[in-house]
Length: 421
Image: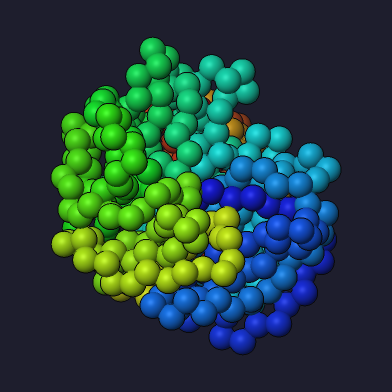
């Protein structure tokens, strides 16, 4: 889900957490107005409004726009931003304990982040190095790498993205190279733009995707009357809204701070009333009935809903490949004290040159290549101990994308991911 975020360098994690993230809880992060050296990681129950500080992140602070998303399977929380020392990094936390799992160094962090709950992958959007387009990236382990380039898209709209995990589609609003605002759906399997209708009469904020009913929801205003907000369903083929409910008395919306309860069908967002109070709205996605309106004492910089129980049931039959660059164990394997690297560079154009693995006793080994859906796209015999053969797997005919190569022996399977450019 798209979230607006301000982040500080996390130097020390001071944690005092009990039952940090129960199912059905909202959580987010808030930064003090006076103390720029710490941020609160918060949790709260909808319709109660009681905010609980789950952990405190202490450090040097200079806030900048970033991105965050949640891995509902591992219950891990990933955030990107810029530190006071102008260092751009990502931070992955254990959602339940607040423990910092790892830091992700990158010179060009994503400005938007989404999680594909079906295939269990973090995707993001960032500007290209020369600002001449948009790149779709994947975040895995300590790596942030480009998988697709969208050269004709020039400017992303803050708080206006969602992800259709059922079809693997990244949904977002952006301006093209002719300065026209469009609603894009991009296929993560091949990088193709599925459709891009122009957004003409309305302004949209806080897109959220309903996985059960395959519907896109958000907040809308007419360009001719920007003071009146509506809760709407958005037709993804023509970018036109169906008004579900006018939101009377709503003066403004906090950008990038929205979430959805996938099981219940409840849409959350934070708005401003006439008295300038921040209010957490909970809206039924079907008829627009407002379940609750809770006045907040904290200024939240981002918001998530814990859908982990729903996701586990909804995608329980999906077969996937765990391709996370979590540590060296993804690339290196050990046997009898020896280690080897299947191949050195994860970026591949035409062929994969395999290292000589002499301690494997098999005369021949089968190399199998799988796509991101776990489907076999290539199978080849390799002769790792025979110098008469070039130990290469030809992949030049594969479409661009992320793949997993497996070397299958009689006793064990060795795996490594690569990016076909």
